[in-house]
Image 1 (spheres, rainbow, N blue to C red):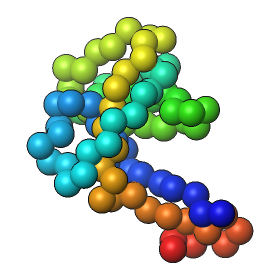
Image 2: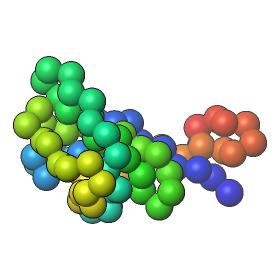
Image 3: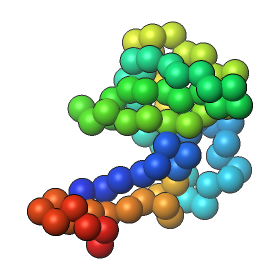
Image 4: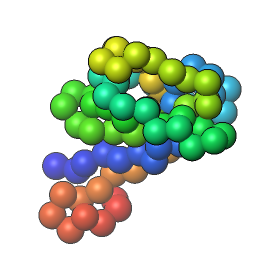
Length: 87
């Protein structure tokens, strides 16, 4: 059974939807922000899996909030669980 992966820039809030080919909304249980000047990275969990979403610098949800983020389905990568190679 393959695993799916996305880079943080392919998972974002509504501020960067225009740049996405196929945005799909997901619910993020927000844990902690990491502010890096031009971006804020939201670190949280989706369905029990730790993820990082790259968002606009002004994005500041409250810790513990449920945040809607959007995955660019066109940028989804699939990996073989055993070999860890991209499919």
